[in-house]
Picture: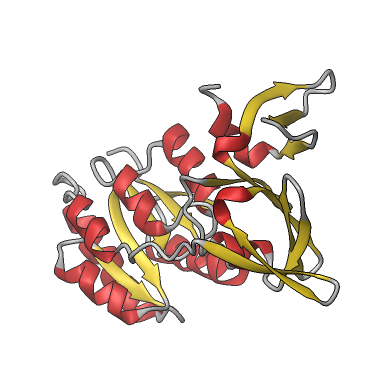
Length: 245
């Protein structure tokens, strides 16, 4: 029998390493690969076609719930979460299993046994589960941002892009640059991922303002904006967003 392929996706390096090490001990004949976030997990999932995926529910880029929707038809999913209410609901809905952080080896061993027993059967359809667990959109209609001692109320529809600036985020509109007292990661968690794409660890852009994506002579990919002179870099991990452009 071919060795099963296991994908581990968790954005916390220590927990990811601990989970991989534990799975190597509990499932020694398996092949393992690890992803540091949801975007990398999606790429590895498409290239590697894993039989089993241990997915952290909350990750930047794409979370474990969205990955489960993508992988569910061909991959057995085990949710890894610090949030018990998510895990219990996932188990009740028929997901293979779950483990709660911090991970107990005995609990992980039981999850491994269950998923090994189910490998001969098709994975369950997780579409309904993901829809039920997906929290309601939290995207605000406007943001508060400061310039000096002045607080500006900025409509999200006016935002061209966001830029990481130390522990703050710079918001750029056509006529204003101001600062938000949130990191880019914290801000990204509250925005609609269909309306704003993170294209670099330091940049998030309004999709409707993207005019084109062009590759420079050195191979770097850059986004050109509609009606704005800025040119924004696209890091390697986010270039998959532009394959259709």
